[in-house]
Length: 253
Image (cartoon, rainbow, N blue to C red; front, side, top):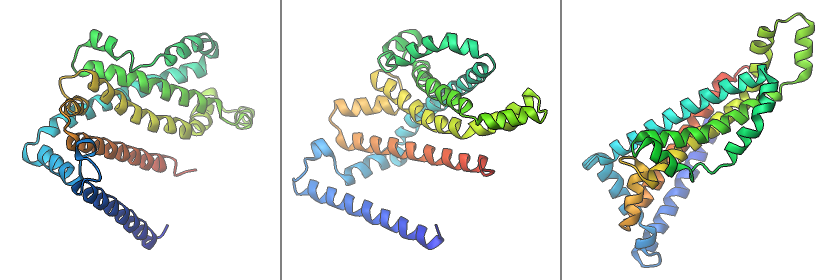
């Protein structure tokens, strides 16, 4: 895509968003949409400005949520990739552990959030536990799938040419599995954020989820819509960041 084409796409998106917000604001001002249930763009903008510029209360909540999501993602991903590599070295162990992992993965982790709250309290620990439980299985499944998907002809040829097991792993298996693993990491990052916010919605001392729950209970729809927009932008940003990292790491392909 050329520079001019990118500008055309950006202008098209800007025109669409501007038109959508204008119609929304006009409909709310004329009573076609009830602001009590849908909010209005001007009220959302005022809430965001107040939260980040005037009172600055949202910075603390945002920090708690992002910190919990980051720790959840890193801890869950490292544990999942490490276990996936162990499964590659010890296939019998993988076969024995697979039914138990399937059973644990089938449990709805959000439903387990009250249990995590009991174990780890209302602080950030329970939010991290929910985030890790979601991220771990997603990245583990991607790691196992990526390793299993390595072309068997490449492995046979490498061994026939005298490559050691370590060389086969570092030069063939791991590079071939990285694209699939990164797809799991990208999805795991989003689910880490979802897990933390979901746990905050139930009970928390700080966080965007806790603020969102409070705003919902007080029918402050401008604030609810503002936080939902903020969470969507965070999700878009982290996904774009992961895509850029993936493109740089896989530039050899």
